[in-house]
Image 1 (cartoon, rainbow, N blue to C red):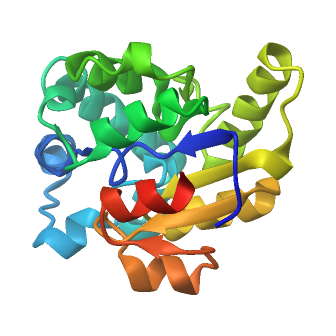
Image 2: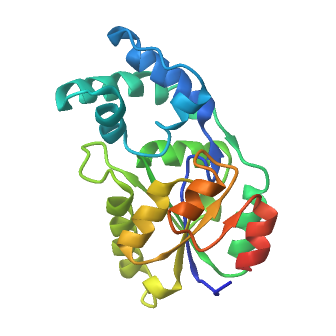
Image 3: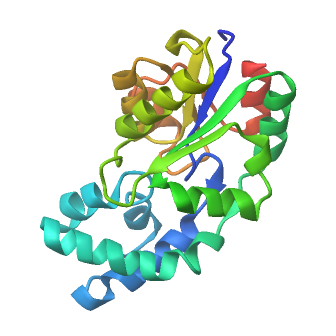
Length: 220
């Protein structure tokens, strides 16, 4: 595996298992519309991409309806749902090992940046990372490529030696692989997340690892 210096981490499905909080808040958000998502697979497709995209794509919402549902989702998610999450096994050890090795580590998530920070603070990981980049509340930064472009901007300002050639995105869905490709950086996948190994391979990931130990050994 190529030696990198800049590690861009996806959040949902890669660093943290946010399924419980997202599923509970989706149920709350969609209740007024009489929509009840059935089964884990139906819910999982909403985890990762921006809700502005998935509410329109999977539920046929127009822009106004999507914004209403997002606002209702956040009513529960910000005070409660964000804490209904757990770190995946081995993530803390990997982040700490990368830090000790001198890697620059950045969270790059389509989840709102404030909620990314809430999750990291819950797990006492904020100090282990160099930057946190997420979606903006106004939707101007929303998709994975928009998040990555903002991450590039911050890295260029903070790190004179930053180069896309030395950067890799670690993610769990094709949205991560697609964003990395569009942004001009490499992508490796994890097979335990919401997309799965087959999805990551099909999306063009350079490699896919089934657990953090294998990921850690490959990148170190």
